[in-house]
Structure formats: structure tokens, C-alpha cells
Length: 336
Length: 254
Ligand SMILES: Nc1ncnc2c1ncn2[C@@H]1O[C@H](COP(=O)(O)OP(=O)(O)OP(=O)(O)O)[C@@H](O)[C@H]1O
Ligand SMILES: [Mg+2]
Image (tube, rainbow over all chains, first blue to last red; front, side):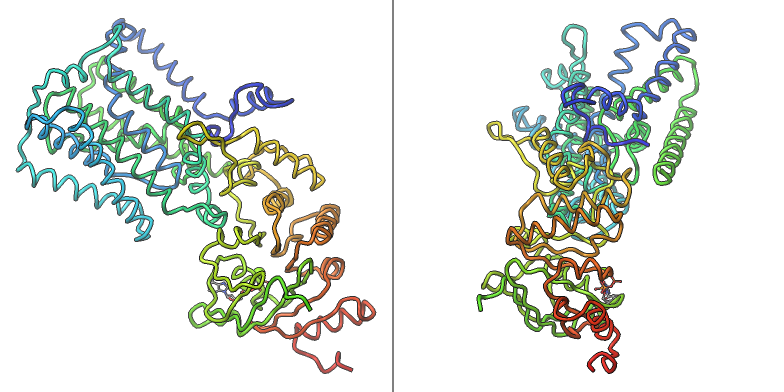
């Protein structure tokens, strides 16, 4: 059974007698360890298949490849832990990217353009959260609707045209690096680290687990469930917008069709990382491992010369396996 | 006579066509322990849920501490000093014991504009309250993996932690072993001695008779009557309670 170790883990030995033993016990229950083993095994195999796999260039390529999905996946992990779901992240990315590109094109200073893009993400999150909390609409349906609405609006407002961004500072953020490490990889790791740190230490994190575990119990305990739910969708929206900015910075242009279908990768990484679809359980770092695995599989398929269309099939199969595994684990936990 | 801690007048509650409570009047004095009994579906849980702020009554008034109150949420009731232990316990199975004990009222530490959970502080306090309950249940245990009795202890600890004026208990002994029931009953006595009022639903007459000053019988949403547990011989008390519950008063009045 996987437990929200994020919510319960303390630093080894920091708590009275038995602290260290508990630390070990919690680790051994931690499914992302198994995933890590799979990841290492895959890496070893791939390094035999292709001598190019373990080169710094290739590893950084993997890092760049997963940065955008990863930033979105942090928000998605939190939403799913809290018993929700957010399908609208890809549309939010596109809308936020379009807004930023348009403002930058008008000569608006970068920070203002960035803030506007994030504000769009927050607005979509507010809408999602409010519809789900107050309209009591199933999150899958609610965010499927906002997925369509936000994507549609991006097309309507832009007339379907793409916008080219030629601001050098913005592009440097997308392609530049410090000490060989791309800025966007640093941003990726920083985002994971920040939220992995916050989840066990704040009410924000604790209530996500509580609401996902039993919204009824949380409600009765006096947790303002509706407001917190909105906060989780807002976080997801804001992080999606941030990822939208990264997308534009990397590619140099913003398109209304950007990040189409990215939710498949995002949700696969989250579920693969051990977050339970039924809420209450999951870890931010678990998602990171899931993300790495996804990135390495992708990379391996490319290195092995598998045609791009097949990669989509493989991803779908991985998602299915991850969900099946989650189901088995959940049943086992219920029997226990 | 001093004003009671809680006065209910004409409290009614309907769920659509179902009338769960029908013009209930009830007073609870300070440091008084009242047992609430009645058949399944009589309306006992509904009554305490209204007191705990979970449901608004359809009609009627509540006065707490001499002032008219209207609870919009469980937090309102808790802030007034009413703690509740639900029949289904209402715990988060994925959280640990300490997190459940403090759920909704986490201890926090402030650093500048930020506040963070005081996890060691809550863990220590949870361990302490568990000790008071006569158990050494680890605060770090995940509640979903606990036994029914252990979960019940967590629910009791949750309520105890916050020094209530009125404690509502819905079937608190249902999942406890005889030994743990004794511990819980001891605690209720202690609470009473500290001036806390108790309203306890139980199907176990022995628990009720042991700690309660008055036994109130609910039948089909109405107060059917009251029994003073120690005013007559125990078997006579049993007969009276039974008669009120079933509505078969003829045999008992004599
Ligand atoms: N949320 C609800 N919605 C609809 N009907 C309800 C609801 N809660 C209770 N009722 C109905 O109200 C009546 C009283 O229920 P209540 O739970 O108060 O009974 P109880 O005396 O606690 O019974 P038990 O001893 O079985 O716990 C029952 O007929 C029940 O079906
Ligand atoms: Mg009941």
C-alpha cells in the first residue's frame, strides 16, 4: 500500500525512538522506489543499446524534453491528491503562451507579459475550482469543458494565427543554460523541490491529502473544502501557464494549437509516480520519477529508431499499466 | 434554577418527505450527562448533528449559554465549545493519527508572512492525549490501517484535545473492547467532573446507566419521555426505558 509519505515522513531520526525504523518502514512501502528500480534498469539497457544514451548532451535533452510536462505535472499531482482532476492544462498553456507572445509583440515589458500569462492560468483555475466546488460538477467533465472553451477562445482571439516571439531575453530563458544546465531544467527541478517541500509542511498540502482522502471528514472537521479545492485548481492553472511560457520561450512562437493532448503525458507521469486516482495518496517526487521514466522511454524509442506514431501507442499502454497497477494497489490496501 | 447550558425549543428536521425530528424540546445543564436512546431511525443522530452544526434545523430555536445560536457549519459549533464524535467517526484514512487529531485546527508556526505546520508539537500533543486515553497508539500511524477500536480512540482524542463545553457522542462505544469502554467511561466521568456537559447516544444501556444523570428517549422523531436512572431499582429503570422506546407504556406505568 502506498501512503502519503509526503504527509507523514519526517527527517530520519528526527523523531523520538523508533524514528529511524519508521523511516525505513515508510521507504519500503514507497512505490516510487520500485519505479526508480525500473528506471535504472531501463537506463542500463538503453546505455547498451545506444552508446549515445548516457552522454551529457542526451541526458540534458531528456531534461529539456520533460521540463514542460513536468511543471504541469506538479499542479496535476496536487489536484489529483485532493481527489480532483484537471484536463484543461494544455489549453491553459496555449492561451497563456499566446497572451504573453501578443503582449511582448506590443512592446510590453517581459515581467508584465509574464504576470498576465500567469493571471490567465489563475483565472482558468478559479473557473475550474468554482464550477467543481459550487456547481458540484464532476471534475473530469468540468475541466473537459474548460479545455474546449479555453482552446476555442485562443483560436477565436488569434484567428488561428501563430505569433512569433523575437525578444532575445525571452529566448535566452528558453534555450540558455548556466554551467551547462538549461534554465528550464533548473526551473523544473525548482518547481518540484518547492512543492515537495511545501506539501508536508503546510495546510495547503495537508488539506489536499485530507480532502482527497475524505472530503466529508475534512468538511466536518471544519476545513473549508470548497475554498481549498479552488486553491488547488488555481495552482494547477498557474503552473500550466508557467509551462506555457516555457513552451513559447523554447520554440520561439506561440500557437493556439500548442500543447494539444499534453494531458496524456502529464496524467501518465502523475499516475506512474504512484499518485492514486481516487485521491488521498501521492507524492510530488513520485511524479518526478514517473516523469523521468516517461522521458527515458521516449528517448529510448527515438534512439532505437521507433517511428513517432508508435511512441503514442507506447505511451497509451504505459498509462494503462500505471492505472492497472494503481487499481491493484488500492484493492490490496482495502483488503488490508 | 440556573439557566441550562443548552436549551432546545421546537426543533424539527425534515429530509424531503421524511420527518426525522418533530418539535423536540430539550435542556442540558452544565456538567450534566444525558443519555439519548431510541430505536434505529428514531432521530437521535439527526438531533446531535443539528447541535454540531452539520444540519440546520427546519424549525425551532437553540440557546447555548443563554444566547440564541444558529450554527452554519461544524466550525461554528466547535468555536462555541461543542465537540462531536460522529457515529461513522469521520476520519481521513490516508492521514496519520496526529493529522486526524488536529484536522481543521492545526497548530502552526509563523515565519514572517508564512505559517507552517508545527508537526513535532502536534505529534507530541497527540501522543499525550493518547496516553490520557490509556493507549500508546503512535501518532505517526496511518488511520486507514488501524482497527475499529483504535479509530474510535482517534475520534475521541480529536474531541478531547480541544476542551469542549458540551461533548456530543454518537455511539462512542460501538467498536470498543470492554476494557476500552471502561477507559472511555472513566474519561466521560472526568469530563463531567471538569464541568463539561455530555450528550451521549448509545444502544448499550449499561454505559448509559453508568454515566448519565438523565436518560431521554426518542421515538419517531419526538421525545417520548425521560427516565432518572437511579430513582428506582435497575430492572425497573430498564423496563421504563424499554416501554418508552417501544411506545408500550401500559405495562410500565403501573
Ligand atoms: N441525510 C439524510 N437524508 C435523508 N434522510 C435522513 C438523513 N439522515 C437521517 N435520515 C432519516 O431520518 C430518520 C432518523 O435518522 P437518524 O440517523 O437520526 O436515526 P438514529 O436514531 O440515529 O438511528 P440509528 O440508531 O440507526 O443510528 C431516519 O428515518 C433516516 O432515514
Ligand atoms: Mg444514529
